[in-house]
Structure formats: structure tokens, C-alpha cells
Image 1 (cartoon, one colour):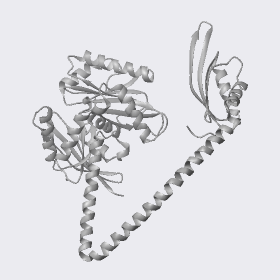
Image 2: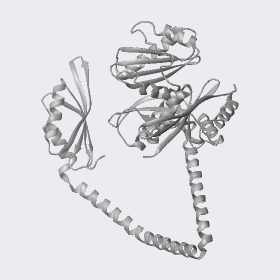
Image 3: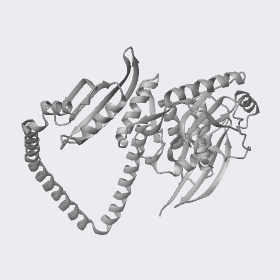
Length: 456
């Protein structure tokens, strides 16, 4: 099992905090930590200032550097999405972020990571930052001649530390709050799983401002996921006395907030480093995709140059044999390309013919026609249940909408359809109840899949 290593960096008000880790299997060891001062600056000067600090990192230059961006500059949202592969989830996240963000998609860098196991619906955390900020951070790491280890968020490093120290309980809804001089971090967990990440921008004039901000966020969470009482509130130290005083004022009432000791959590840079040790496919990286591609191209170029150098050494020792081998391989490649070109046209024709045959078979098969499907749907109707909409998809299935005076009739209808040999699956897609002048009515939507049909 190989050794993994990373340096996690967090930009503080006047310093760059860093922690280096090495891991072999489940064992993780510290490889150093510290703080490097940063001069106060703004805009591009600020980027240059902490870029110089990165260049001064005493950690091994072979270790990749993961840099945490301020979460106050990011759009964060917990989403529940249908199950899908990585590409499908990425597309769904990009679509949702485009709806939520006031900035055009081309001005953003979007990242996401799963917050639960691979069971539908998937709960994921989506994040977006302005492209210039992400580009400046990635360029600073490369300008410091350090190996890039990805761009993270400081709020996610805090969540990692809470998770690793079992600070979040496994029962009920909890509120974790950390208030500093310029911002407040809010994390809400349901049964130990995060459902809300929020950065409230300060400064706050008094505890009432922060209290209203928290109430609004919790009210929105109740509307989205259902009301749930807070069983626990935790006020985490931030090192800013005024911020902690405002947090205490904002968290008056019940339950009484817990106040962990100032050293209850390690520095945020440790959380960044631990996240950087995770597999790349399992964590968020806000590095602009173009820079990732450029980096891979440069790495590929370096590998090509190294291979060319090795080939040169071989050429010096046996130029004739090497040249002959290259000529032979070139002829083989040309021959294979010609063979592939000759076979491509017949293969395309065969695929097209096969597709036509399948289409003809589908149209010739009357056992799954629209008329037969509608007849089967009507035969199994329970008394009192009415259909308001039927949608037939050729060779796929039927989507039904309807209503009944009681939910039991709907469940009975589903059970009847499941016994039909025409349908391979019957999937309820929603049952809602409402009250009408004539009495209560339950409305439903069902999706059926025809037996022998291809997956949609």
C-alpha cells in the first residue's frame, strides 16, 4: 500500500497556517505545521502576499499543497439529487448552481462532493466560487513551485474536524456555530449528517442581528426538509472575544448552548490536509478545469521529454537497432490504421441495420401497443379511482395521473398493476392529499415499465 501525503493551508487574517501529513494505510503522521506571516494587502497585492508565503513553506516540496479558500466568498447549498454516475451528478449540480447563482456560469468554478452513501436520493454539497479568485489561488500555488493539491474551503475543513472528533451527535437536529470578527459559520446536522452550510457575513452590530440570521436559516431549512426541534446547540471558540460574545447573545434560550474548550479542535489546516489525503473522486476541488487540463498537459509533456531522453541514451548505444524498430512500428501502425479504416464503413452499416431491425420489431409487437397498455390500465381500476391523464411511451411504459377519495384505493391499484404480466415495474412518483368541497381527495402519479423494455 502506497504512502499518501499532503500539506493543508488556510489563509488567516495575517498569516498562512499550514499542516503537513503523511499517511500509509489507516495510519496518519504529522510531517510538520506552522504559521507564516502575511503582510496586509488588498486585491492582487493580497494574492501576491500569500503567494510569497506559499513559496516559503518549509514542508517538503514534493508534497502536494491543498489551499482552502474563504467560504464567505462561495455559494454553498446542500442538494438532494436522483442517483446517477459521477458525470450525471456533476451535470445536475451545475444546473442547480446556475439557477441559484446571480453570476453567469462561465464566471464560476463549481465543485461538489457527496455527503452520504450511494443510495437515492443522493445528498451532495455544491459550491461555486468566482473564477478569478480560483484562478489566482491556483496560480499562486504553481508560482510558488509547489505541487498543486487542490482548492478547498475553510468551512469544509471545520466540518471535517467536527466529524473526526465525533462532535456531531447521531440523533436529532444540531446547530454548530462559530463566530469570528467578520463572519459566522453555521453548520446544521440531522442525525449526524450535515443539511446546512452557511456563512453569515459580518460584522454584526449586536446579537439580535445574528439571531435573526439564524432564525431565517433554520426556518428555511424547516420548509425544505420538515420541521425539527434543535436538540443541541454548540458554540465553538473562534479566538475572537467580541464574536463569541455576540454568539452567546444570539443563542439565548433553550437548549442551553454547549461551549467546548478553546483547544477542543485542532487548527483548520489539519482539516484541509486530512481532506487532501482522501481519494480525489470523493472530495471537492475548486481548481478551474482549464488549469487542471494545463497541468496534466505539462505533466504529459514532462513524461514525453523523459521518455525522449531515455530513448536518446538507447540511441547512442544502438542507433541502428532503434531506427529499425521505429520503422517497423511505424509500418505496423500504418497497416493497422488502414485495416481499421476498411472495417469502419461495414461496421457502421451493420450497426445501422441492427438498429432498424430493432425498430421494426418494436413497431410490429402489438402485445405492448398503446391500446393494449391502456386496456390493461383500465381493467385493473378499483372502484372510485379515476384517471385524469395517461401518457404512453412506445416500448417504454405508461405514466398515469389520477385521483381517489382515499389513499387505500391508490395502493390497491398499484398492487393490481404489479400483478399484470404487461408491466415489469410500477413506481409511485408521488401521492398528495387535498380537501375539496366534495371532501378529501388523494392525487397520485404512477410510472410503469413495460415487460421486456429497455431501461430509459
